[in-house]
Length: 338
Ligand SMILES: [Zn+2]
Image 1: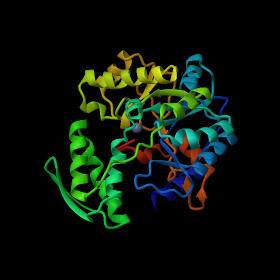
Image 2: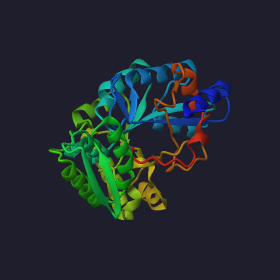
Image 3: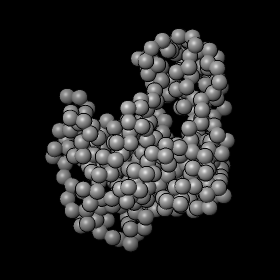
Image 4: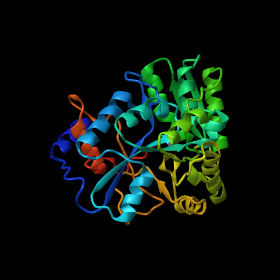
């Protein structure tokens, strides 16, 4: 049975219950980009507008209109009984404001947006967008690269080859920033790629709309590195300076931080605490309760795959995912970029 069918079958037996009763419990949903319906990016990191609309409608029908992470944590601290759902969006793409924000507002929902402040300020594309851009704009169909002793041949002559190349190269870019830039430059050279990827992150004018609309903003580092590869000092600087830049540009508090790619260790947690953040979110799936480690709060992805059954978008599967019915299917799976 395929993964989608397994999830659909599991959703038939997943229960919800009354969200207003039971011990205090929080589910944080993790999103990234919001695409126009029908848009298929090579590195598809998000959901369509109609999928997000459907997810919010499914939550509303279950009595779970999403709030921001900070609001949800305040509820937990007060010991308010029942289940609360928070939505979060990582990276700070412009589509979060142009597409997600109006959908959230129409649903009466709020969310938290973790911004990659340094890349927004420099108008620089994240590394995975540079990777996808190189594969899409290749003028030479094939190239063989040697990254850190690992040889990899990429075939950009068709969609399947580009998708396979993306999958092969993503883990090879989990390196320090300088080495990552060198490898991307090597890839562009080998594939005969002119120019760099456009920055699709929001600018500050656009991001200000989040604050005006009552959404929470948080930090997602300056440049989206793999934090555990950095020294403790550099980790702290990436997080603290991100929060400071967001406060300077948007005049909003930044209580929380999302570790890029969920990558964190004990040094990362210590750095987030010493940088003054009240909480941090990660990418491991699970619920949050009053006893959860505050700088390692679990989140669940509500991907298109997780919410699509044999008959298209499924509100039942969406809510099964919100309730954690699929957590065990995801154990041990490593996400490379987010
Ligand atoms: Zn990210």
